[in-house]
Image 1 (tube, rainbow, N blue to C red):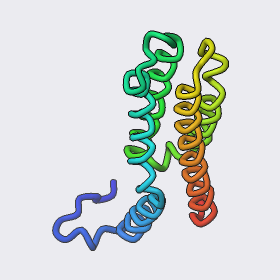
Image 2: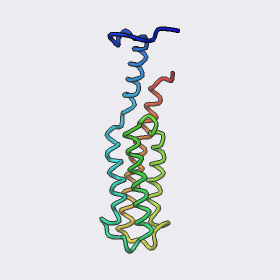
Image 3: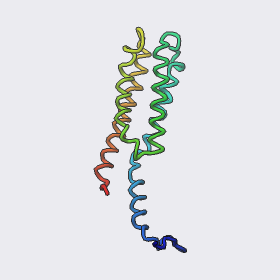
Image 4: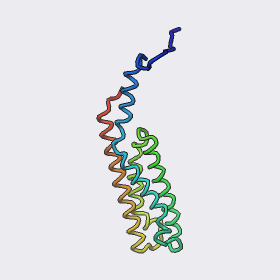
Length: 148
């Protein structure tokens, strides 16, 4: 059996170059760290928007819809922050959520007024834009990172 017990300085460990390369590769994938915060804020506003714009009684189905969609966008943002290497593949899902938010007032709501429509269109456009930024960053990081 090989002696795997290393005493003293860690720099004498045989796997140090590989560990440094892996650490640098993982840190290199965080190109869009500034996008995580705005994504979370879009999700937070989406969840709270029915109460901010006071359409909880006139659009109860859309109120529940926006609450659930806001929580979903917020969870995506937390995932982007917590495990970016794994989650940036889901940035296309955020794009789909953005498109859905744009068309949801007519599908989920019942005779929505201009304020409700504008609110969902702005939230959807922001989610779509931020999802595209995350997807573009993930694609460029995948091209520049060599596979082992």
